Length: 214
Image 1 (cartoon, rainbow, N blue to C red):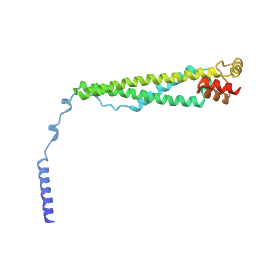
Image 2 (cartoon, rainbow, N blue to C red):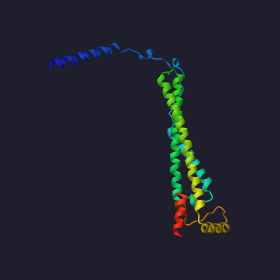
Image 3 (cartoon, one colour):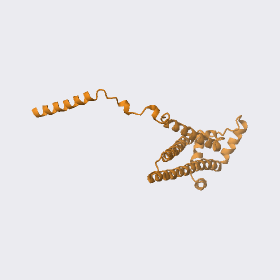
Image 4 (cartoon, rainbow, N blue to C red):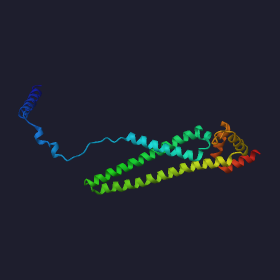
């Protein structure tokens, strides 16, 4: 125990000596002043949530205009729960693709600034080339995604027109003539569900099923 106490006393004495010798030490003499530092500009925290919100709005506008393009005169069909839910889900997927594409470009610009600041290592140039490839892949995906969405709604409209029973079309034409709104397309829920269901299967299968029923 005496040995431990002696060691504690020795350490305390050394600490007290250091404290007394550095009492008047001024560390500011060894630090650079603000005038000596380059103008680094103001630090800004990137607002990722704002980018997500912007991408979501942009995506929803694209899907809404696409649905309007093919289904604007079929108001009941456009308001069908399946169509509305699909439009929202498609908008979410497209928004995520837009956001990832923007983040990849942001990362690419950061890498270029690193090179401008002197980081010319082979590894850095390899990373830049990989990011360029990712940007190309993102562009391809966005293009193909947009094409698939257009194809779906275009095919849906064409199939709905092709498989509509003449009796249904005739009934709605009469209702259109007597209606003040020429864009009305009146169908009961059952007939509208049948149209959507049949539009989702091949035209040949629908025709075959209809023929067999006769």
